[in-house]
Amino acid sequence: MSRIDDMIRDMCPDGVEHKPLGEIATLHRGTGMPKSIFTVDGTPAIHYGHIYTKYGTYTANTHAYVTSENARKLTPVAPGDLVIANTSENLEDIGKAVAWTGDRHAVTGGHATVLSTDHDTKFISHYFRTAQFNSDKRRYAFGTKVIELSATNLAKIKVPVPPIEIQREIVLILDKFVKLEAELEAELDFRKQQYAYHLEKLMDFSERHKEVAWRKLSDIGTFQRGKRFTKADYADEGIPCVHYGEIYTHYGVWADQVINHLREGVATRGLRFAEPGDVILVDVGEVVDDVGRSVAWMGEEPVAIHDHCYTFKTDLNPVFVSYLLRTNWFRYQKAKHIARTKVKTLLIDGFSSISIPIPSRKEQDRIVETLNLFDVLVSDISLGLPAEIAARRQQYEYYRDKLLTFPQKAV
Image (cartoon, rainbow, N blue to C red):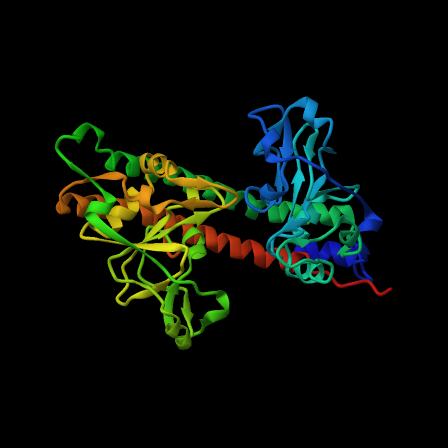
């Protein structure tokens, strides 16, 4: 930090100039590139959605490729260029960017903008994640359900432009945090692979088919659909509830605490509840894998469930059931009972006819105890690697915002 301060004091005694992006770079909006043209190899392709789901501030490898024929129809990305996401359903993701550090040209498509400049694009990519940039972009983003930050409006946003030597020095510091977090993420991914291996192994009853009873879900439990409520019904206190969307994003295999409540007056609409020990299932999703996702409710009181959820009430260990529903074998079974329209929907009558293995209660409990140990290692943000990753991320964010806040040069 002291070295950066000294460099700013020596090289920018009157402060750092802030300029609109359009003055220091050229911005080209991409076109096309549906996921249907992706291939397993070929020309590296940066999809706008991957910028906020798969990439950090820079990358030398892509998660998608296209043929050379399709690449000629798309927007080129030269080594050193920045690719910016223009479109998302939430404001937080808009304007996130990834610097392309590969050794050959890549391509991008619609909903992305390519920024080319003589400045350090990794410096700009880090800046695009600061609190100041997030504040500035709000003035230029538009839309409700789908939010847009056009290339034209991006060009108007001012960014600090210290000398290139300072930019590179700051990048060196911030990249150390990024590299450390990436190493921790890689270790966490390895543990997740171990967890997935043990999940499949412990839940594989194929060689014990004659020893273990197999029964239809409809024969060992009952299903009940929830009742609709909206986020407008939320309150700080009141009736504990589980919204179907939260099962994708917040809850794990089991839960004993909710994150939201409904105001008391909603009860008059005839809510339906999951009791302690019930399994809550989602009946809808944008992708097949989300449909049928579950959480075992292990809290001490009933919780209201949304009408895109079902409760499954059974005498089996509910956490065992929830783990079973996450196996590759069960994913294959449930896929047969999902209506593939624009929104994927679970056909509960068919779903309930799936037969599952039913080991003894003692065996169910043993499997749950073993898998819970692995689940904590990869999911509990208060322990182990998840906690360390969260701490490193906070550290990076603190130094990023501190290093990228400059005394502004008077105009």
